[in-house]
Amino acid sequence: MDNIQKNLLMQIADLHSVPEGAYNIRANGELGGRNTTANIDIVTKQDKPGIDIIIKPNTKNESVHIPVIISKTGVEDLVYNDFYIGENADVTIVAGCGIHNTGDSKSEHDGIHTFHVGKNAKVVYVEKHYGDGDGNGENVMNPTTVIEIDEGGYLEMETTQIKGIDSTVRVTNATLANDAKLVIREKIMTHGTQLAKTDFTVDLNGENSSANVISRSVAKDKSHQIFLSNIKGNNKCAGHTECDAIIMDDATVSAIPEITANHIDASLIHEAAIGKIAGEQLIKLMTLGLTEQEAEEQIVNGFLK
Image (cartoon, rainbow, N blue to C red; front, side, top):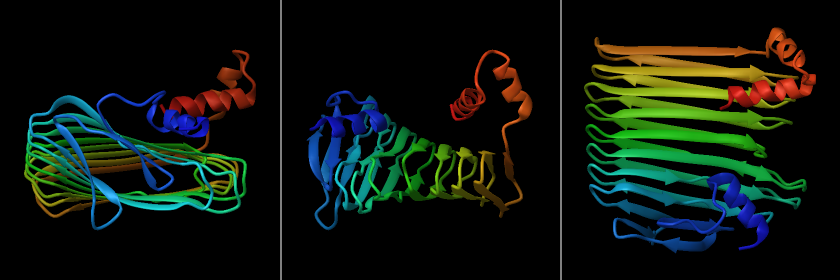
């Protein structure tokens, strides 16, 4: 693995070396390394590109890393990854994709991830997207996530995209059973003429199921962001969707939260706020010795924490 690939791993998965435990590293459309454990198996699909990650019931305090790195121009990569999390497991999954593109061609990674979260299982899923390079080629990522949470299961998703992705369309569809819980926290920053679109649909089918979908974003220059969410309460349940965005320069942001109650005991809330950085915030920081640009960066970094 060369220095460019090592830097991509550090950016998307905080890895400075090969991780301990289970991992699968995909590099430029091919297997770059793999390790399994007694409780976590990783199997290559036979009918299409991708892997099955199988986590045994009652697995505790283990993690699996599945980063994707692209360090060549003109690579178009598509994978189908299925996660099978056994009953009562408690695991962390670290994913993400990094692209280093110094050529004139588009480099693209599209991932279709399906989560089967077993009864009373708990999963924390962390996904970072990052791009760099000094060429004219585009960096494109289009993740699709399908989530099925069984009774009493819990899935927490943390997704981050703050640099170098020219175009991304993220689609997430989730179905929850009785007492299941879903938490999604999204952080996005766009600049230049970048496009970022996210589309969340959650079906709260189970009694006492709940979902909390939160998006925080910053749009700079002439970039464009679209946030769509639809939480459907099909039983006695609780749902909340929230979008907060800072808009700067000539950027545009669209926030379209939707809630649908199909049951008398569905309790649903949606919120959306878009605005510029307040002048008094800038002034306060500038009185402490920061330049206007430094003050803006401090506010943005704090907002996206």
